[in-house]
Length: 221
Length: 221
Image (cartoon, rainbow over all chains, first blue to last red; front, side, top):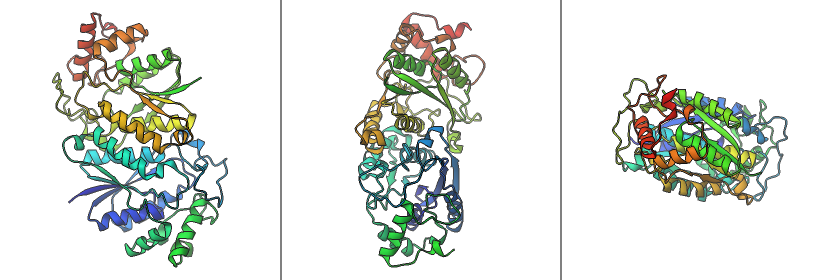
């Protein structure tokens, strides 16, 4: 059975990616990261959903001191509220996050002989993060296949980004189709007990559900 | 003053890279990694040398459970002794190690505004590691500049590999020229109190000193 490593935060996007990988008949191993994010509530969501989907989850701690340059990590900084622009890099940008996460996923894939690392960056309802660009993953895939063991021996490893070109509404529809346990997913940046409704992530999620014409089950809990 | 992040294991190669970066007038921050390697003795060497060279050192723990697939991490596996071939990938290969290390260095560079990540892979006295290939770094550099913040804003980050095309003898000569405190550097894979003299790393180091026509000061301690 073909294997995949899935980078899994417990949010709407990566939960949909995990369900997608399962639907494509990959035997999945999920990885979640604590990196000091104020919304470590998402890690509980990841644990719950991985358990429901019966996928082994490796929980890693990557609390690097310099990540406090991000407002997503340093609680003394303010989270931007409702300012979704395509041009700016928001203060919630975490330096090199997706590059580091992808690299750690690649390491696991190279160790266990997985042919895919699945992750959920999104370039359409883009929040200005450079590490969500399709070109970045295209070139990173080339680097990976030059610098790891299994590809050198003829077994390629591919970073798959199944929702990178989808709108949030399309992601919601795909999640519904794949029966993602949406009510347990967590997207809010603010770190409270309930989604704040105002941060970029809450706004994007609400827009997606609205456009898909369905209620967000996570708001009903 | 221009800044660099230096990936620093305390071995001959990365110590030479650190001294090289200082000689090029970079303000350096070094990172060392504990990843479960049997020769964690090298981390003590890194600490000592960083202190002598007056460079701040960030010591990180990246003990990922799957790295035990490498004989460099799993003490129950045997370390190859004196079988330096250019073709095979040795059992000491650590999955995705240099990709992960580079990514973490890039993250720090992006956070502090450093323009270089300096690291010491070597493709000449090559021990068969795919993550020592020049092409890997060439393509990884492209990916980095697509997927991080500072390059997006016009300030490029470059992974520099100053010794990648040098023989071990050339590295020894460069180290002597740059006054690297060679006697404190640690290269042996075997994890004892003194270098074993038989592992690939000891053999390569001995060959380098022999060809350079000098005694290895680390063997005199």
